[in-house]
Length: 463
Image (cartoon, rainbow, N blue to C red; front, side, top):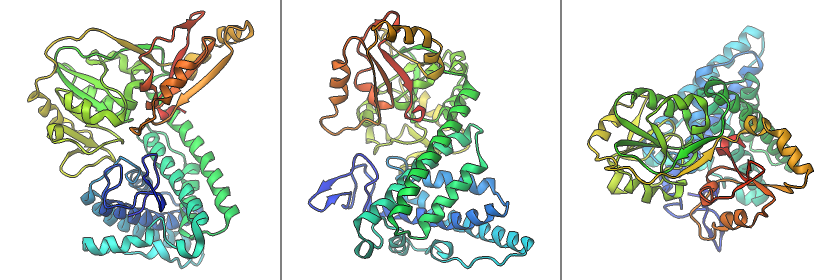
């Protein structure tokens, strides 16, 4: 295996990248290789979808499959080799479907279809060992000895950017927000990668174009979140548990959270968010659920400790899963793109198995001392007091704004997040998002003329 797509990447004398049988995230070589092959197959689908799209052919089912398939290959999302075998098989079927659609569109338009190669004609092997060998076609380092590290690195830069686009676009799609223009650019980018580009300027140009695409996708995601759940408002969130049966929901997906809240209404089960779902409490639509009790725990890298201590069931909705410990493996569930071998996976928002598992757990036996953090300072909330903020700046009460955000990690030295926050001058305001906030969001930073000095603007998705 070779992978260097995330902040957990190992460093050695050979340079950055996980090369061992197991990466830092816990991904084994077989799973990593199958992910590479799945990306290769997704390029094949994209080659036909790009050309079919130019002839006016769009397939919504294919769009959804490609987004989720690529999403599964992000760090800490899916580690289940069996799921990847199935995804690769499905990818071949969808590729053939888009090929047929493209050929039919060409015939209708009186055009001769292009004869495509590479990912467009790759048929997956049937045996696992053969599949892993075939994955060399899609390896990140393919062609390294002839094209060099710079070209390989630029290709990876574009590809990893596209993985981010796929994740955000998948979330947006679940919220009813899609764009034919986004899909067209998405498939064009994947088609470009399938051509095995070697021109530096072209690769840099696409890296920038992927950034523009991601910005557009995040607009769709914002529209989906605020359109369905309302614009976030400043909301105090309890961070200590209360007595009762409990479910902990981690990840990013508010659609999953909403479905679980609906299915547990009136059952006496308390729901807590974890990690990147903390900002969900700021959305008005979630305020109608009294059994959404608060947030438990902190960032993703502490889940082995926090999940082990949580006396209920756990649901992973989108990403950041770490190998479950035996102490809670029987009460953790995955849904959507997430997967871990041997862990129960939930399809179609049917949380009945999860709810049944909760009943066998003790839950919290008593109320804890109340403690809170405040979330919901998204753009509408901040712009709603813009006049006060601007006046405070003009009066010299606020000198600077500091943005402290990003994905936290377990690596030693990450306490610099806390150090920076604590050293912000008293006339400075901190905007924070992503799970790095857990390093300091329980500190009391006070306010400046009624304006909190710490403003939690949301998930990393809300950048």
